[in-house]
Image (cartoon, rainbow over all chains, first blue to last red):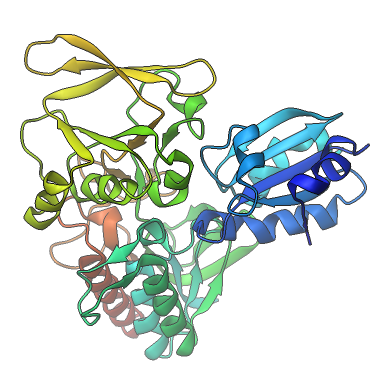
Length: 106
Length: 306
C-alpha cells in the first residue's frame, strides 16, 4: 500500500529519498483517483526495489498541492533528488502507466 | 467458450449485464481499468433518472447498476479491451492484462469520449488549467476566474457546479442560443457568478506552464479579444468510441456503430451495439439503459437460434 505523506513528512519521505518517488495527489471525492489508486498499489509492490509510491491527500494538504501547481487530479509526479522530473495527470490503465514510468522502473 | 461478452460499463453495458445474467447467460462484462462506470462517474447530481425522485449522485447510480448486474451473476473484469476479432462464429476479445476470451456473442457498449477543441497546446495544458472534468478539478479553482466552453446540458452543469468554487465563471458558446434543456439554461442564466459570452470560440490557449488566458474569436464578425483565465473547462461534446471495431463493423457517416432499425444488430452476426456508441441524438442515461436492454434481448434471441 502506498504510504500517506504530509507537509511534515514530505522532506524526509519524498525530497530526501534516495529512490525515485511517485507522488499521487488525490482526494476522496475524485472518482478517477479511486480507480487509479489500486493500480498504483500494484506498481508499488511490483517495483518496490526501484520506486517508492506515496499519496498526498489534497484536502488535507492544500499547501503541498498548491506548491506543486496541482490543478487537476489524479496528478502523478515523480521526484528524484528533491525535484520533479516527470508529471502526469489523469487516470490511466496499468500498462500505460508502466510504459510512461519505464525509465524509473528499470 | 462464453455466451456473451459485454464491452463497457455505463448504463448500457450494465443493463445488458442485468438482462443477460437474468437470462442465465453468465455474461462477462469487461468494464475498463480506469474508466469503469462511464460518463456518469464524472457527474454530480442526476435528477432525471426515473425511479429516483430525489435524484442521486452519478457514481452512486453506477454503483447501483453494477451491484444489480452482479446480483444475477454478471462477471465483471476491471480491464481494458485492446483487440477484438468479431468476424467469425467465435468472437475473440483480448485485454490489456493479457487475457484472451472467446464468446458466441459480443455486446459493444463502449460509449463516447470527450471531444477536444483541437487547439495547439491543449494536451500540454491539460491538468495545468485545462480540464474536462469539473467534479474532479473544480476544487483547485477556489476564488479564481474560470470559463466553461460549450452550450449543452453538460456545459451548464459544469458551469453551475464550478460556481461553488470560482469567483467568476464565463460560459463561452459559439452560437447565440444554447442547445441545453430549458431548466438547465434557466439555472445557468440566473446564476450571478455566470456570465455568458455568446458567439465566441476559443482561438488560442495562452500561458507558459499553466493556462493564463485565451484568445476569443467572435463567430459573427471575426474580431478577436483576450480573456484572462485561471482555468478552462471543455464541454463541447463527445465522440463515439469506435477505434476497437472501426475496421470490422459498419459505421454510420458520423462514425457511430451502424445498427439495423430499432434493434442493436450490427453488420456482423452475433455482434450487438448499444448506448452512446450508436446514438447521435438522445445520449441520456435512461436511453442508454434502454438500448442495453435491447442488445441483451437481441443477443439472447440470436443464441436461441444458433
